Image 1 (cartoon, helix red, strand yellow):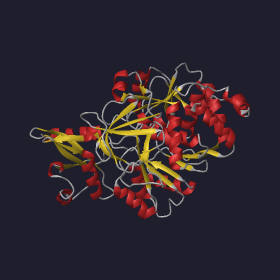
Image 2: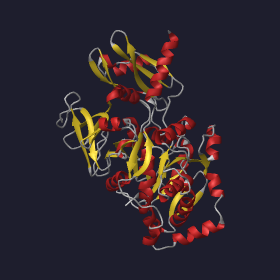
Image 3: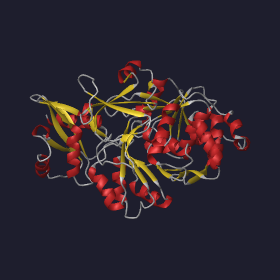
Image 4: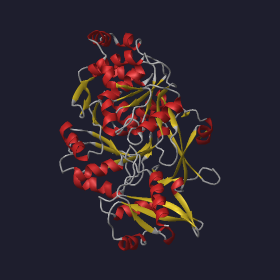
Amino acid sequence: MQLQSEFVKKAKKYGKKLAIIDRTTEKRIDYSKALIASLLLQRKIVNYKDGFIGVMIPNSAGSILTIIGTHFAGKVPVMINYSTGAAENAEYAQKKCGFRTIITSRALLEKIGCRLVKGMVFIEDIMASISKGDKLKAALRSKMPEKLLLKTIHSGEESDNAVILFTSGSEKDPKGVQLTHKNLLSNIDSSLKRMEFSSDDIVLGILPFFHVFGQMANLWLTLTSGATIVTYANPLDYKKVCSIIKEEKISVMIATPVFFNGYLRQSKQGDFESIRLAVAGADKTPRVLYDNYIEKHNITIMEGYGATETSPVVSLNCTEFNKPGSIGKPIDNVRVKILDINTGEELPTGQEGRLVVKGENIMRGYFDDIEETTRRIQNGWYDTGDMGMVDDDGFVWHRGRLKRFVKIAGEMVSLVRVESEIINILPENIDCCVVEVPDSIKGAKIIVAITGDIDEKEILKKLQEKLPAIAIPKRFIFIKELPKMGSGKINFRGTTDMIKDILRKEH
């Protein structure tokens, strides 16, 4: 079974029920119309010679239907990040995966000032080329019995690639992650059970589909369950998103902590009354954010953990069991081990080490990169590159990226822990990112990039009560805005480069 087949089954079952509410174009599309539109796009996309089809369209009915139509045509969507360096990302994807055609939007290119890349075709032109005859044929096909209709769309193996997604590049160059239909379907099934998700849910779909969190948790989880997805192209339009949540009576809100924080600031009490489930992932959820959602909206954020390579969910808190600060228990069909970073031996509960994961959700591998794939996946276990711990109750605790541990005077210091303690002190409207820079005496020193005015002496005084002396930052440097990835995560590498550049200029 493949994702597109599951969608066809739900489309035939739910018919006139709303599948997509597009709050950018104000279109409302039921499952029957979504099926017809996907069949129309299948007939157009099948004519492109490439086995891979680039997709670079903001969250909308158009992007969803293009992705489904691509699957119907037997091709693999390659999702392209348009949030920063869109043209460069498009060319990087073409070169990496060896394809030409990228379906994008003329309106998007104009809005972000992106130059035209060879191979780009516009969804506006594709839709304009559809004739009345095409529409009639697609409508008639959609009325075929389910078994016969499934024979008219591409159907392959669960082990086939379902999508190519690129890692964030927040630490180094992006890698092309191959996720199969089995990877995603397994993760969807286990996540549905943990979240007690149903076809009655209305899901906020603001996470970009070029990010695994949006691809699985917003798009496919929703449409293979018969639920309704409400899309909006700009997740950073906090005030508008809050209005959408209230107006559309959103029941499931899945987002990153950065987005949750923005919506908290712009929302009023009562705006989120319809939300029954709020799930945060892709970055650490600050305790102050968790507490503020309970205080203002009586909503408990369920924190989870995952990675692009794990489709993405590894662990998740839920209403039945929740430990604030933890990343929950592993979901069904996923195993977690903690290994000693030096010996590779499995550690008992309560001890911190390298976090590795095994399950049907683990990626097929990095595209055209056997060396990196075999380095990260050994005997079926994927090395997340993160530090963690499992407690006696089976909850997993994330301690940060191993690369965000720095050795100072022979001691290991977690930049994530330093960052967490600072966030708990700062006002809500100020962001920070803790980085390391070389130090001729101690090997490295800790610098904090900060986005607002602070009382540095007061913060350092409070930090001395929480952190060992070796972990106290040496300096705070003001940056108007921290660079972020499209998912809302802070671009750690970009921030580090900015800080180094500032220090270079000072000397």
